[in-house]
Amino acid sequence: MRTALYPGTFDPVTLGHVDLVLRSRRLFDRIIVAVADSGSKGPMFTLEERVALFRNAIADQDGVEVVHFDQLTVEFARENSACAIIRGLRAVTDFDYEFQLAWMNRKLDSSIETVFLCPNEDYSYVNSSLVKEIARLGGDVSDFVPAPVEAALREKLGR
Image (tube, rainbow, N blue to C red; front, side):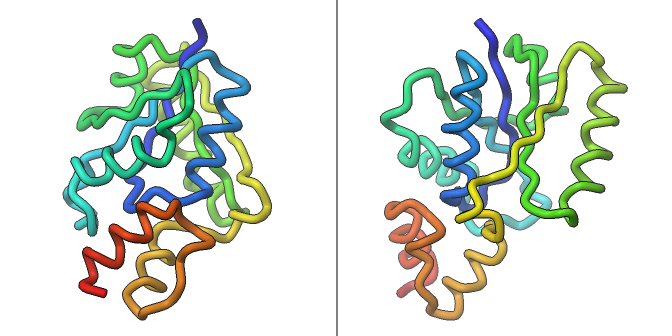
């Protein structure tokens, strides 16, 4: 069984994240969505909320599980027998950072490959920070996030 790890903060999960999971699932037998603790980033949603929102977003998908982690990504990948780490590339601006991560992860464990996927063009401009900003300002985020995430954003922001 070929397992891939899809790590991230996912604060909140977007339709672009879901798209990458679905497309990754065609390449791998099992996808582990690994929600990072990332408390230092000051996420809007708690770790438990982010895990629950992602689980809800992919509830009907076989071969996909959502868990949390708080260690080096390559260590977590190794512990879960993952042969690859999935990373999304939306634009050229992502490339430098993602390449640095890939090289560092390869240095830490050369047996785990990094696989870059570009999101569907409908989501290439979507990121969690922009979604949160639009929601904070009262904008409609329904085209960017699953419906339960939209509801969670409204509740979190008191709208």
